[in-house]
Image 1: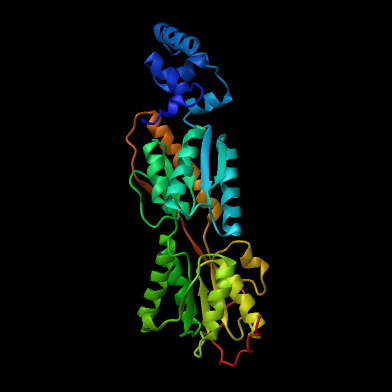
Image 2 (image 1 turned 90 degrees about the vertical axis):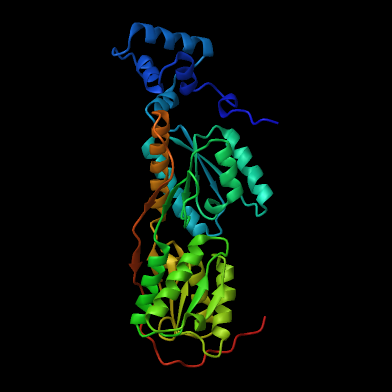
Length: 360
């Protein structure tokens, strides 16, 4: 069955009026605002279209005419509550500043068919554009469905540009390499890595930066102790246990986000290891866990709130371009990251045995 057009799914918009009158949305706005620089014949055509379509001008309509989106969708499924919290704060602040409304919905499905169905449902909410934070920013079924519905999308923290999509990210490779260089500079040579989710490009980019720093320092990346995580606290616990069970346990652990780094600190404490006296532990993101654990985490500051605000700004600019008839396509902004040095990292120390792990 043919997909209904987005404009047939809900109330009449200013673009419908503009199309019916054969003018631009900006011209409709000028007529609605009583501006004088509109020809009488054009003004009459716009008013006739408004009457015929039973269009009711309101604040939202005026926002659309000005090139702003009344409703922006945000579809999320993030395993880190701390990351998601910062992301939503930035998005809500950006929406308040821009005068638009956010339609926020969770998508916790793992199956591709379920993600595609969720995207199809979301496309019927009359959103003008959609922001996709990780990991949904890399969901091909969701991106495909939104493209089919002709809804502009901004992906966040996606390592590569999707066709005709917009993207906001930091340089994960460089950030991870800088953090690894920092640990190397403290004298650490056995540095463990807790990787992020297998399905996210940011995870592979951070691992790639880690390996590049080791190689540049004359170390064999293949000999580095690396364990898999999935950006959750629980996965960080399990990965840290495996790292510290090694007979040649690392003198430092670089976790791919703060949740997993905080978990590694917990495991070290449980084993009687001082942080950073016996082992340095660093994270990534600079979210709430970085400053709520003891000691506070050295980490990479990813400007999560600023990234969501930038995503909203980029999406609104794209919508304005589309309404003016300009060509749209791929665009990307790479925001700055920062190394934040706190108490969880220090010079390499002489190893001492860890306390035996208590059985469950």
